[in-house]
Amino acid sequence: MSRRCVNEDRDGSVAAQWSTPAARIGSIPSLSTLPDELLLEIISSYPPISLLDKESERYRPDSHATPNRHETLLALSRTCRKLRRFLRPYVWQSLEVCGSKPECRRGPLIKTCVGDLVPRTEGDGRNLNAEIVRLLGIVTKCDPALAKFVNVINVQMTDESDTYDSTLSELASCMTLFPNLHTVKLIVYSSRSLPSEIPLQTPFKGYSYPQIHNLLLDGITFPLVLSCPNVRNIQANPTSEIYWSLSWYRDYASATALEEVGIQFIALREQHLDLLSLFPGLRSISCDLVFYQSIATDLKVHNFFRGLSRLSHLKTLRASILADRRARYGGPKVEEVLNRLKKVMLDIQKIDHEDKRIVYTLSGEVEKDHFIYLPFLKDTVPKGDGQI
Image 1 (tube, helix red, strand yellow):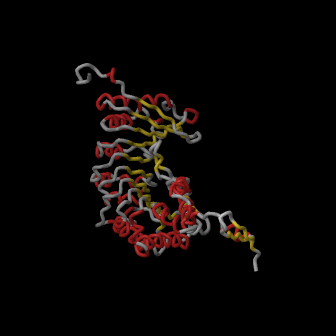
Image 2: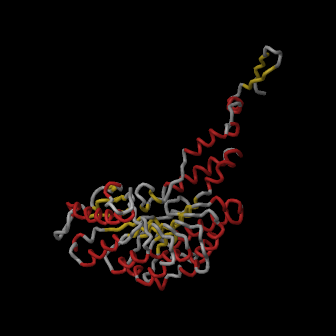
Image 3: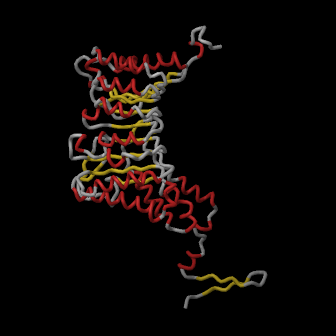
């Protein structure tokens, strides 16, 4: 029998203290006794990791940290009922299935066009797809009350698995059950080369996701845009020029709410110029100017900058520019390119009288965002424009 110390209090009551280590640990206040304010402080140490960099408004390919956050919060939620109640909305805020998760990683991984990791073999693709179905089943079948907490879906798939079609159909169906879903990142590694061979549009056809505002896609997953009438932000990086056909852009014109688009223009084409005319309401656009600098006198380049100037609502212009030390063929220097961009934004500013911003990176150097702020100065408005 364990020894016990008996102490008599001043009021005559008896207090027993167990001398065993287990008893001493048990006497320490547990998490369930902590006030709500302290529990909220614990949760604040694990903020949601946005797929969009809010400062530079560009696509963040690194999705490795978010699954770790999910696993940490899930472990904490199992410590006591009180933490479980607090953490449920946070644990299921984001559904993450990517090659960086331990349960999905089997063997060597390869990088997709947007820098993500996906399995190389058919068996590995099956692991990814099975994990997607498992998570969807938890929040829609096992505990449907969790569906309202889902804000973000971030999944990677591969069409080299025999479960590809069924998994995609399950995802398309379940997305209608998430009323607060606002961001979807869907990356599919395909072994096929032609869009006609990729049945991605079929699973989403007939569905509408008006709650989705942000899409992060690769070229193969572009058709999802057609099912998101209220999408405001599209970030994409297609792997091949076949995804830039004019007919595809015409279909996307139904997304009238589109305000931000981030597309890596691999080479300048007429389709890119047409994109600017299809979405006159764009407020933010990203463009790769690395290849433009060697053809600075080309008429297409001139038309491209002229098209940018017609985006009367443009607030942020992001560009990737070739560093001077890597410039070839006598192309313009960084300063000249920046002057062109500033002229575009200042021309728009003369019309809307609002602040502008240019965010640029120098290709060939350590990736770092540089900012140019162009505040609107009221005293620069010519008289007669109705300004006091």
